[in-house]
Length: 238
Image 1 (tube, rainbow, N blue to C red):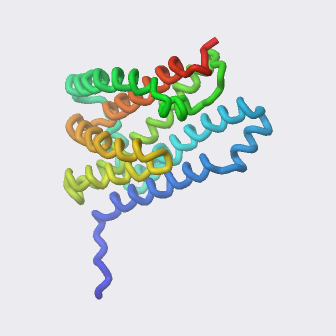
Image 2 (image 1 turned 90 degrees about the vertical axis):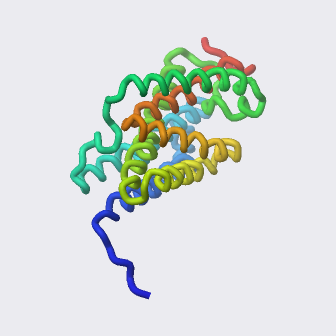
Image 3 (image 1 turned 30 degrees about the horizontal axis):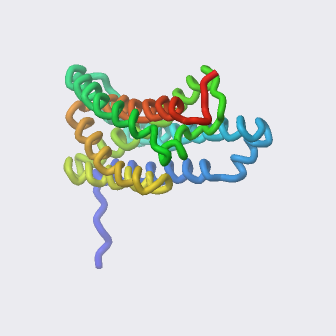
């Protein structure tokens, strides 16, 4: 069997796949590290330590999954960040997508957030008393994390693989990897990541920008956070 011939067109998609693999792995093992958790517990106490640890997980994820890979790809390939969907354009269709999907997501999360299964896991931060600065910080860390997420999946990975694979193979690869990174959470989120991943890829290719996917993902995460906080019987905002 002959060694496969290398082509320069392979570099961009291979680099994107390699970076999402390495970046998510770093984030995952950081987030489950007992040493990291214990360092926060020792410094801030049990309740605050767990909260600070979760917030740090999101910041690390934003960097390792999205921001650092983006810098590497831009430096190695000599491309502009707009080549990966970080651009403001097609505003009308983008707003239609954002508001249209929000009309589905927000009511769905309102009713789903009341379920015991949801409240057993969300909000991820399990403090019983929330100050307004805590609510704002938790929301901001979600935004930072999801920006890194969308920058990688609907930005770097999608736009890097479409030229070589074609649109639908790139979308399916994207949705498959997106589902796999949800495996550590639970079966429901892993299954749900497949249709959501496909929709967000289609929206991104239609608009040419990651911002719709980012704002839709933010709507999904923050509405669940706010509703879960409101409905949780053991939590309150003071």
